[in-house]
Image (spheres, rainbow, N blue to C red):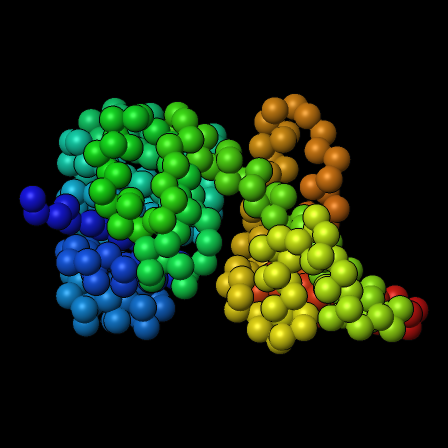
Length: 299
């Protein structure tokens, strides 16, 4: 059987890695123009077809994949005269791989259905390095029949592909996952910076904590920078982290419940953004806490 033609929107760190993976497996890729030409040009050199608008891309693709930074960005690509909805063909499947607001996801799904198209949310776990090798974790939500139809492609991208429920469940699960992960990241970053104040070697702190139930992948991502000096072990920016925690807070508000833990994480990330750390990677929050504590000691 011939492979479906895939229209891919969002060639950032993760998206470009996914495109590279799909092209290596023989998929024809359609992409759209972007001001950051490096990843676009690389995909075109490997055989991708570049279109000027999402409408043109949608009209020429069997499956459309989005990997952009926010619900606002997804909606900007979906709606309008040059959006996906304006050019989409009936039965085309659209998959949002980003981390979006569940309410927005459900609205877009209804609008897609009105055009005879199908929509799924499928947020991702792991890193761009995993994406290049097809080793992502993918949390897929939507109609089971759509999931089963897309499964061969999803399995080319992911090592672990889960169907987690109806439309919106994937984004809900991802927001809860990221709340927990980013809260852990902030706590571990502060722990390393606090150890510095106490003149406790970071390696000693890590060795003891990692020997017990605190040991986790997120701890190791923070350790990779705090001890080994590698901020790219978790290539996820502070700006994106702040966005995700903001979405989690908005989801809690929609449920009418008071989250007790996320406000501290949200405040930390927003303060880091305001302090010029937006484009730094989450493991570099250790440096943010160092600066915060230094400034506090001076005042």
